[in-house]
Image 1 (cartoon, one colour):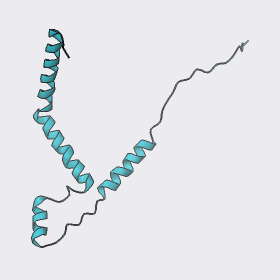
Image 2 (cartoon, rainbow, N blue to C red; image 1 turned 90 degrees about the vertical axis):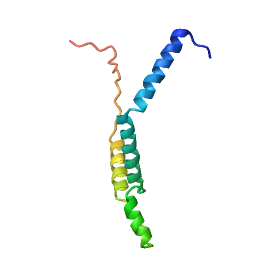
Image 3 (cartoon, rainbow, N blue to C red; image 1 turned 120 degrees about the vertical axis):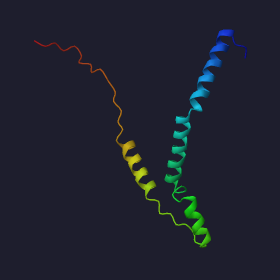
Image 4 (cartoon, one colour; image 1 turned 135 degrees about the vertical axis):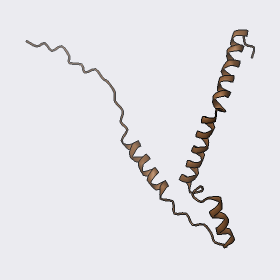
Length: 99
């Protein structure tokens, strides 16, 4: 697709801004926190590497009782059920006259 010079420059500037925001240290730190939180929710991130190594040396399987996921799912369900939709309708009163 051929873009005009001004549109090409606008696209280049937008891509540059996106890259700068995407690779900013606060963005990467936030993404790492989200990944860790998701792993904890799934139950895969609840053991540290050190603890897993110690258990492997003992030939012991890690046991994870994930109560976090149940609470998050329950709260998400309550939030979804408590949503409501509002709509505005006009109420037609007909040809009533008041005296």
